[in-house]
Length: 343
Image (cartoon, rainbow, N blue to C red; front, top):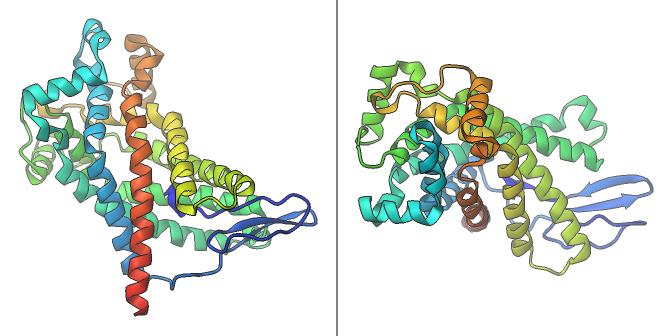
């Protein structure tokens, strides 16, 4: 979602030229205004927008699947491992274990369900964001300050958070199944997407498909909101100092940094979400018998504060290329589909 933001240069002391492919921030007197970019492409329809968003998300997840699986395995290690085993854990050790025990293709274990989840999730995310943004701009308080950059940032922050929450709720069962398939190592309990959905429903009830949803929603909203805010701020500063730089490279760099910032801020919630999703998987006994805050306390008591950030390094390695690939694919597909529509 970081890639939807469009903020250009902050101009001190008055108005100056803005690159035609970017929005800009102009100071007119004491009021900061957001100047919208001149449209170079015809607007794409909702179906094209859904297709572009879904394909961008699916391609990004496929390219970063090995790092995503490593992140999940690190996040859930503390559930059934002793302290000595946790101390020996490292990215390269875990990657070597996967190759030796499961084969190279195992890095993409669960990727089919990842794509099945990411296509509707990413589509809904981009689509819902645009609609929430339009809706928020019609509110009386924001409509009267529509030319103020603070109001615009508020729209991005709230709209992005609402879009992420809506998309996550709608596609959550697939996210849970993806986590359980990716977390399987030697023992294969779930044989595929439909088998996992059916088994979880039978053994844990329909509500079992929504284990960890609370932690997910608590993390998704702030994650996307922070991502938008950081992305827009960095992009604005960059464009004000280096207006001639490539817009794609600027967006790639700022988007990657915003992804790192949002991941760092919300990673503990993501870790708790993963562990809640795996509660009772494969017939195992429950590890956490308390609510969300009880899980936090259990992890800190058993693994220390660092336990809340177990797997953060592969997460960083995943975020940097993942955001860039998603951004470039989405923008390229939008331009392609716009050209096709206008032909």
